[in-house]
Length: 107
Image (tube, rainbow, N blue to C red; front, top):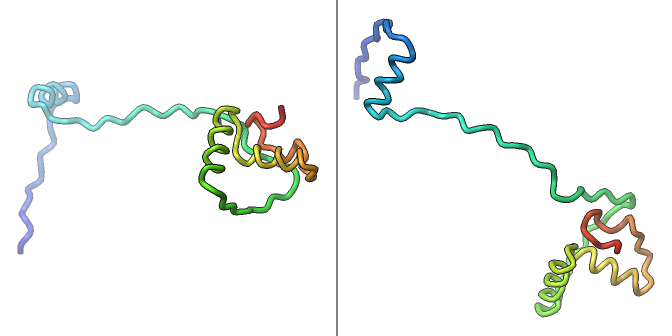
């Protein structure tokens, strides 16, 4: 297979405005740079607990998980905060600083 033989285009004696008018009349699509997206602040502060955190994966009965999700939604908090508050209420050493800030858990 051979490559097509392209011939060079001579320099154009037309200004950009004239070329734009021709392009518009022919319906030539143009590339448009999208406007820069505004950088929005996070909706809530990033968690910065002062005590070291460890991960715990928990599996529970579906109805319990569903109620936890619903409670977290209605209280505008997180399931993590609900569990930590419940543990604190039972006497576990959970501090206010352990709760995620801005998640409504330290009320």
